[in-house]
Image 1 (tube, rainbow, N blue to C red):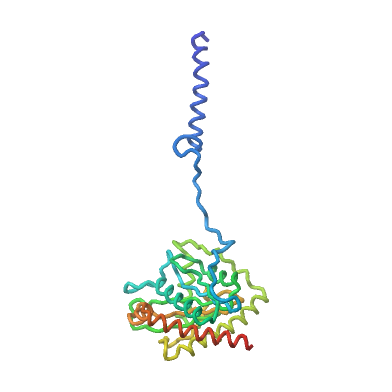
Image 2 (image 1 turned 90 degrees about the vertical axis):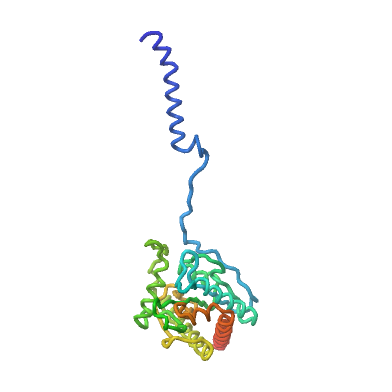
Length: 287
């Protein structure tokens, strides 16, 4: 090798090494535009569950957790400009105010804004708070059948009470799936005999509360001809808390929708439900 080549190699080899290191650093985000920054994204985690909501009311009162259905990316039923997630939130807030005003119970809402919660997050909020009663509020749509009207009261059952109830349960349970991806990661392993016995007793108390809603709502709330229904609804699965889903009406029916959206309709709903809750707790304390 000539003297000139030797000198050239002395300068070229370090230059090539430095250039290679620079390219490697750029490729790994250690240098160049965006250096020092790491792209992160939080994956959904459900071990800790949703943040617990505030609880209002005197500490010596029983606790009711009110669950306005749907929310966020899940609007629920829609018809004629009405959106279920908005209507049921207004109903839930009206009931909260009524319960607080009459000092019937402490109250927590699973959501008080437009956010999405999984079904298992909703009833687990009630469990984590030690709720004495869980009430989920919804509104339905019958599509083009504008004459379908009236409220319904759902309790948990291993078997649906009718094909219509089964279809409703399938639709509600499916809202844990967004874009074809199951978000709930729910396990079916809760099958031991103690949980089953606890759930059986809880279902009896849920049925008692459902009967009280129908009783106190007579002549005040317009019920569907088949007002009492049962289905395997995911949101009602807490084995230790009496739980009812109140289907407040059909927003595909203009009269139902106007009633649910009106201050008067919300007031009548809140007063009726508050009476049923008061009687329920009185009877529970006596038994």
